[in-house]
Image (cartoon, rainbow, N blue to C red; front, side):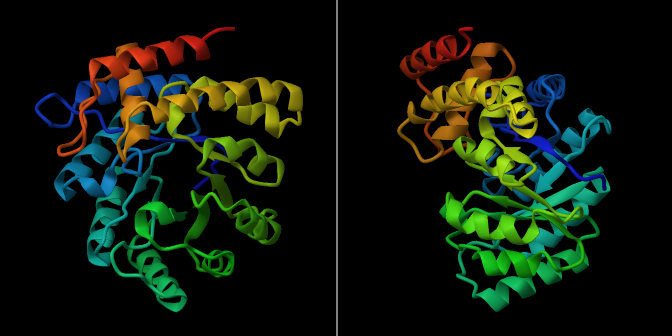
Length: 299
């Protein structure tokens, strides 16, 4: 697999009002993101609510994304499950669908120790015949991948990258110092406010939920930082910072996905139905998000 650099989009999962997968909305979203210059599509991550969906829906969604992308940009698929066996099953399905790689978070529920985490990833990479990105998302998994563990994981054949959503920049500095010069390993930042800094220090890009809504803003910010144009980068970074107000509109746990979906509804790309029992968006909040979007879109 060619090394991926730039903005990877953790795609929302469009749903119909009847809580079924919205394949028409998904097609519009895929075309919008590819036209926006994104480097890769990442279905079934945290923003897409991956583990919250049945395995059947996850398989169907990823198959559709791979088909719609048609090889124009790579699809890297989230396969995080509580059961390692189910993770492997999803990995096999991703390979069959045409995914270029998979993203694997530690299994939730059991608090694995460092040696157990190493064993888990060793098993996954040996069973799933796709490149693996390690995903550090302690807010969801309740497991924090320490820098020394990530560095050890990078030595496992088949592990090609790391996505950090820990919000621990000091820890990421340790990982970057050790791994940034490896041509066969990619380091991505999750939190959007830290993406440009990560690229400056040797990371290759960001995995940004807001890129569902404004891919060009994130792509432009990444390009300017990669080229060392700090003043131009700050113009786009300020828009990213402003956009993050959308994530605070809904007082619910999945506020990021809810806010982004509502923005996409306002753009006519897909609806903003959330999978039950998640809180459904309300009209008053839609007005607030429309106002934030108008501010972001000002020159």
